[in-house]
Length: 67
Length: 469
Image (cartoon, rainbow over all chains, first blue to last red; front, side, top):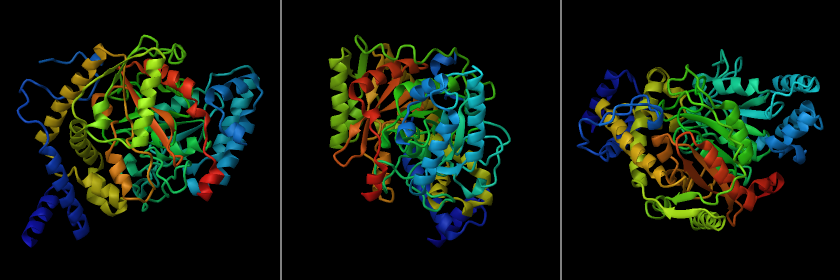
């Protein structure tokens, strides 16, 4: 438990979130758990040629590349 | 005073143009109303009486000289407090921006001023427009629903929602990243439009998530919404998402009716993907039946499950909003409200590849949705699945999760929340229409056909009763 917390603190520090209180670390851990759960629901195996929308524009407003 | 408070923009404009009503008299009446009633509604975070009266005097002088600028000349208008007004702080309801005086007007503010609108002040929002559950630890108290004391007014354009329903302003600018115009519109019995992505400039609007953010009009009826969009729509090279495209006359086809139009109903959003509140369901089904009676052709349309849009949006929103707030989260995490900080920290460890995957998926979801408009003129579905809950209730979180607004933030299609009556408890009900890219005029036409038959827009909250309840 303590080790996991220190690992989280180190990861937070590495992205500039240094010196977070225990409360904020708890928030960070909860937020990460929630996002991991949601990310797990993203579809995998989308075709490589499928590009992301960049600065999002409605398709009819942008010629865009279509695969 | 109530008579002036609930004038529509169109009604007020006609009286102002004819000089049957003085802008100064109109603005003074509404300022007095705010003074008397906003102490418990908290719709304004900063009222600007001197500026408003000065603008009203200017409007009066111009109209007297015959220089009427159009339907917004002399109209009391509000701005959600993430929209810049030069010389006035844009606080985003946050301690972090308490002293953030705007150097220039936002594009929408400038357009409204050029049209002669009187800016009444800055209106409440959830901190940084984050939406979600109500925060009580921001520098300004949360807005309250005028339809029932102590009830949630929707988020995050909560101040514009409460202030419009209370008759403090005739129109207001809201913003919508995952539904934040349409949610308060639904909760406060208003018309709220999220325009097509790129239709209205976001320059000078505090971002929440760049690729999901929209600014748009909130009003008490459909015509006013069309009139307001007419003022704020248009290309702005300073907004990277803005699209160069002609702006049509949004009010021209308002009364054309729905005979012969095809309306696709996305029932699975509110019946299978999540079960709508029975009273909300009845209101939506009654609207569908009415459209059929008015000559529209009704068909069912199936889209991806609602949860797909929600999951896609959650990843994009988390990543983009963390990018917006990264520096402040590093340096001033204690200055956020607890709930805002918790929401923003969700994005700290989103991997770049997950964000890209979400954006790839988004393209598919948007194209699938867009393809449906080959067969229908508009889509009809729920906006909120429930009437608004009590402000401080844990129900707020549950209710906010039950909605079908975010598919159209993912896709960028225009979508409008339309008042659809009231629950037995007197709380607003609504439905939502979505249209083809840049076809806001069709949404107005279809929304107006329902409004004309039902007249819900003519009901206003009894603020004395709301206080006593």
